[in-house]
Length: 216
Image (cartoon, rainbow, N blue to C red; front, side, top):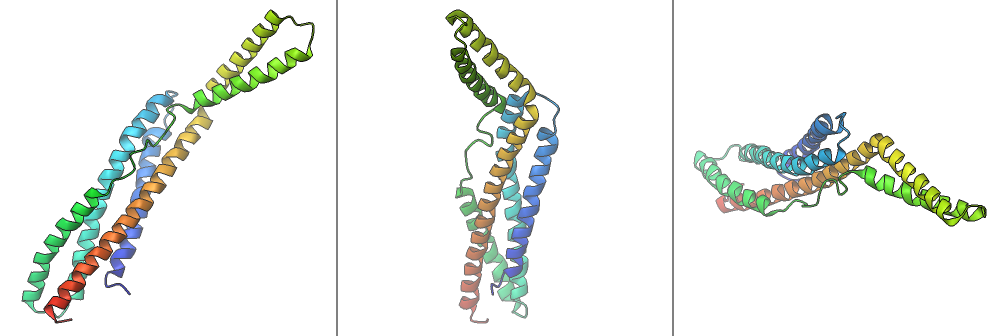
C-alpha cells in the first residue's frame, strides 16, 4: 500500500467535487440563460471554461501538496526533530519541482464548443432534406413547369430551414451542454491522472529521503 494512500483518495474525491462545481457554475451562468444568442453564449463558454479549469487545477495542486506534506510528517512520526526539519526543507524543493512539472503539462487547447450556434447546422440539414424531397415530389408531378418547380423547391426548403432555426433552441442548448460535459470529463480525467502522477513522484522523493536518513 502507498504511504500516501489517503492523499490519493482525497485527490480523486476533491477532483470530482471541483469539476462538478465547475459544471454547476457554467450551467447556472450560461446554460440556464434565456438568451437565444447562442453564438455569444458559445463564445463566452469557449473563453471562460478553459480559464476556470486551469485556475481550479492550480488550486487542486495546492490542496494536494498540503495533504502530501501533512501525510509525510505523519509518516515520520517518532523521528528526531532534525529529520523533521530536514523534511520540511526538502518538501519545499519537492513542491517547486512538482509545480514546474504540472505547469509543463498542457491541457487541451480545443474549443469547448466546436460549432458556435448548432441551429445553423440543424437548419442547413433541414434545408437540404426539404430541397431533396420537394425536388423529388416535383418530378412526380409532370404538370409543374420548371420555373414553378424551382420556385416551390426554394420556398419549401427555405421555410423549413427558418422554422428549424427558430424552434431548435432547446435542442441546440442541449447540444452545447453535451459539449461542455464532454470537455469537462476529458479535463477531469487528465487532471486526475496528472495529480496521481504527482503523488507518485512525491512518494518517490519521500522514500529516497527516508532511505538517506537510514531511520525508517
